[in-house]
Image 1 (spheres, protein in one colour):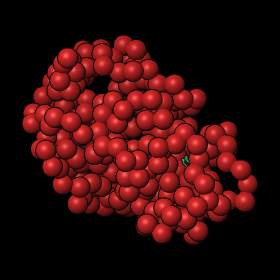
Image 2 (cartoon, protein in one colour; image 1 turned 180 degrees about the vertical axis):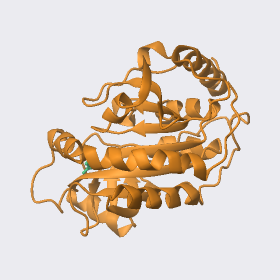
Image 3 (spheres, protein in one colour; image 1 turned 135 degrees about the vertical axis):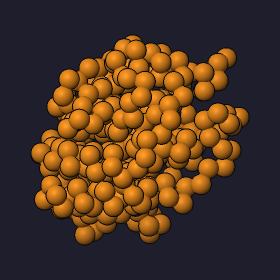
Image 4 (spheres, protein in one colour; image 1 turned 90 degrees about the vertical axis):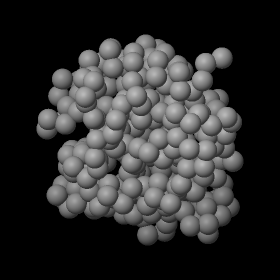
Length: 287
Ligand code: HPA
């Protein structure tokens, strides 16, 4: 069986060729969460490849996730966006879920912006808030780096002290100010899903330090840290989490609120991308 390094390089080369990405490009990469995928379509000269065209990618299944890797430009900056991510609850292991972030890493992405839809467990939050992710709690019991370490990708024991890069966090604060977008800040806890949490689980997560709960993001952030790819993250608080919200949670509500927040979210991303690009240096590509 091929190694993750081989699979990642093969996919990155296919993406570079299929998307016409220059060898010296140093794109800002994005993972677009539930209901947040429209941003990719607004890129200048957008070109996309479906997951089926990318070797090593399984196909995404969730409603609201398109399953494409899109390349384009925003204000002269190269951008690569994953429109629809992979989730553990679809049956993928954590390393497979994180595979697209590995591909971003070897393509020489200079920064990774991860986004998601999440339930707020901080009682000070409201549905429709955007939250800068300051740190995470991995409550899944899984880690994408379990198994033989591939030294070409990163070290056996990567440091997560600054998993959410302080330079990019600073850039996000500036971007929010520029875009006139109110930004909450907090810790994101990942659960496995696909069931939403029980009220007791939400109370537990909050007691452990979580401000928001969701079903994604942590695997991608861990492999990015492994590869030395700086990350920042935004949660769209689509609902108050179970037990805080008096009403039952539905995926339809999550998608509706994500849609309603789209304008603010896109404004924040448009301001953030150039600032993130300027905040961190180019990285070398392996593919
Ligand atoms: N819990 C988990 N994931 C979510 C939620 C939630 O309340 N809202 C959106 N994604």
